[in-house]
Image 1 (cartoon, rainbow, N blue to C red):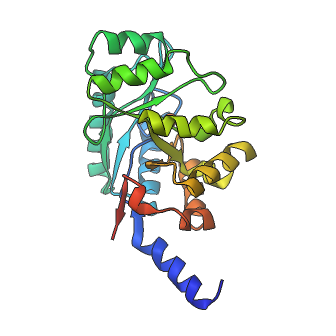
Image 2 (image 1 turned 60 degrees about the vertical axis):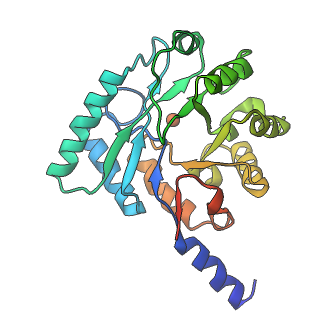
Image 3 (image 1 turned 120 degrees about the vertical axis):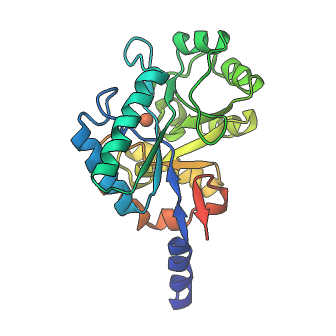
Length: 245
Ligand SMILES: [Fe+2]
């Protein structure tokens, strides 16, 4: 790439910033993310270093394992937001959840329970890393019928996608929005995850980019993603949590 090419690509990155994060585990003591208020504050400082002014916390809701509720999550968000103010850290923490697609979730949907969403009616969901549930398509259909917009967390991380890239295209046809983890682009999880994440970027199969930060360490590594070639190649006009200036 010549001089003008380099100038052009760095301008593109500089002018395109992720405006807010929509997938992280910054709330402390309720899932496998932050353990203490102090570590949540450390994560918040890292988020501001990365240029974020707002994040949507998405604690896991997973059967008996992480039986989080709106009340539990909102109380933690209130505590964290107060501590952020006291410590003069300029980050606003809103909240939703990351729903694990199991029978418990199915029951919530069937019972018309009001689910935790972000950005209007967007609903973040995940599956087991090894197996896609049989009821996946039916559940997506039911969620959409009820007015939700399903967002699939890190499709690139599921082992069942690694030999079946066509499944990603099927998800697009189903009307599921796709959220890539920033650290997947770096190869943080595995070479297979990186390969699929890069393929998704190259084909334009993405709607959101999330940190999925469980710790300060994850956010420190995210700086490296922002400097990477693959990040430069992202079309930010497709990214719903980006602000293209
Ligand atoms: Fe997550």
